[in-house]
Structures are given as structure tokens and as C-alpha cells.
View 1 (cartoon, rainbow, N blue to C red):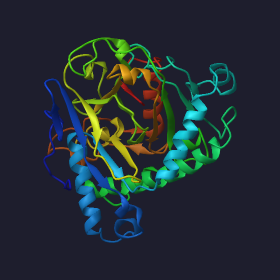
View 2 (view 1 turned 90 degrees about the vertical axis):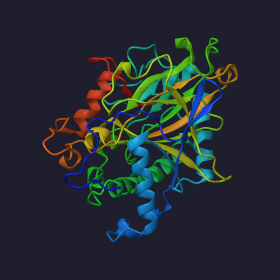
View 3 (view 1 turned 30 degrees about the vertical axis):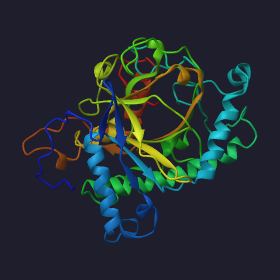
View 4 (view 1 turned 180 degrees about the horizontal axis):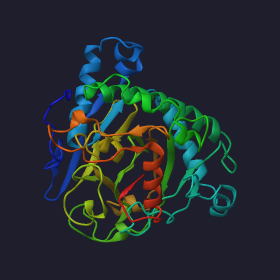
Length: 384
């Protein structure tokens, strides 16, 4: 579904419903995230080599476009991460987080707001400043500083992030094809990945291994809508940046989405109450690895809100979930530091002004990081 010059995208993306939502009982709903096979873009053919897109590439691009216009969430498979690599990655994450608290606080570098690198203990961050601190811990290792990490962690992390780098580049090609843009439209913003190599060269994407330790069980409420802040592990927010690859650990529960307008959402985007849906990726056969990919606020801005960045959060759905450790691995894709991101006029109605001024990858990223760390006016964009 291409956007041509003079096309009529919505004047403001208003998600009145989330495609694929199914009602579960009387109150809870589930967003069945559609699956896109990325293998046509991982092969050296079609748009990957500058040729005419293959039929399978066109089909995959259309599916991505439909999902990003509606929910901003899609599941990709066959994107270069094997089941064995996924297993080793989560084993490495569990080994890292299982270290004594004193070791993690003293041996791992403390989170530095200026570079967004270092170890963030439980309660340090709040992705929505209007809410209590998030119930998670995460290492963001910088400058290849693996001090304090368990044996084997560095090798596994490097292998995983190299695979995700290639997947991120190929997904950029798919996004351009989906929107009817030049093949390298988004790829040319990912030439150096220098925002991320500042943090962990030679890795080419921002990444986080996330651990949500056991917490207090949720108070009784209606369905899966928490009635207390203790039932929310990560407050509502939209990711900033272009897009995020999210690997969910075995049995990970609690990721929810809520409809919002556009990509620049504030603290009122979500909150306690109705309107949230559980994210349920389509089940895959044994041995097939899936990653949830969601649109970030910067990509929504880039497309003048033709694609949407959907608010999401992580809740504690049950007492059993509260008692369990929850793991996920997130890979955040941002444009190069000096790359100018300007709304493409092809996404505006004739005579309509573009909604956002130009910015650079670094300017936008650091502004959002300062907001998330409470340095500037609170906003609900962040990284879960």
C-alpha cells in the first residue's frame, strides 16, 4: 500500500480499534499480532540488491504497512536469530541478573544519563514520569565494557546484536517498500549507527536485556485491568526512535497496548482504566523464533503520523506472574546522530502543513532520554 504524491493519508491518525483484537470473556481483550515472514528480505534478491521487488517481498511489505497504520505492532519470523542463539541469549541474561545485588551495583557501571549507558537497578527509571518507578532492571553496557558480566555473556551478546543489526537493516528496506518510498529511504539513516556505537562498539543497535523480578501480586480488579500502581511493572509510554525489536522470554506475560493518536503522546495516553489489550503474538512452530516489532515515535513523526506509535505498558496480570521472573530483550533502532529526520511531504494532504519540524537523530534521542530521566518536561516516550 504505497503513499503517492497527493495521496490522502488521515489528517490525524485516530485508532478507533486495534485490528485483530479478540474479546476474551467479559472484560479482557487480546491483540493478536500478525506475523510477517522476513526471509524474503534476508535473502540477497529483489529490493535487497536494488532490483525489482519479488512477489513475496511485496506481500510482506503490504502486511507491515497494514499493521503499522493500525496498531504499530507486528511479529517477524525468519529474521536471522536461531532458536539456539535465542536460548543462549536468555541464559546469559538470567546469569547476569542472578548475580548478587552488591555485585551488580558495584561491578557494573552505573547508568549515566548523558550517554544512557550502565546498569539501571530496579526502581531507578520511570518511563512515564506521572507514574511510580518501573519494576525492572537493565544493563546498558557501553564502550565494550563487559566488566562484571558472567563468563560467556560478551560472546553471546555480540553474536545476538550482529544478527539484530542485519535484521534492522533489512526491515528498513521493507518499511520503505511498504510506504512506496525509495528503496534506501530509511536505510540511509542507518549508515553508521553511531548513536549506538557510542555505547557498545562494534554493535550497531541499541539493546537492552530486561529483568522484571518477582513483585507484589495485583489487587483484585475487573478482568486484567490493574487497580493499583503495584500491578504495573512498566508505565504506559511509546518507544522513541524508529522501531524496536522485542524478544520475549518464555512465559513472559503482561505486555499491553492502548490506542492513541499519532506518535507524540504524553502521560495521558494510557493509565489505569479501560482500553488496554494484551499483546498476543501468533504462536509459531517449535524452533521458529518470533520478535515483536513496534513503531517508535520518531518513525510516526517521520511519516506525519501515517504510521502510528502505540502506547504500551507491562502489567502484572496474575499472582502467579507476580511470583515469576520475567525476561525480555529489546533492540532499539535510531537514525544516525547527524541524520536529519524531516516529515516527508508525500505524507501530507495538499495544502496541509507538516506537523513536526525537522530534527536530527541525536537531538531527538537525547531530548527523549532527558524527558524519561526527568530532566525536562515529563513525557511518556521510553524504552521497555
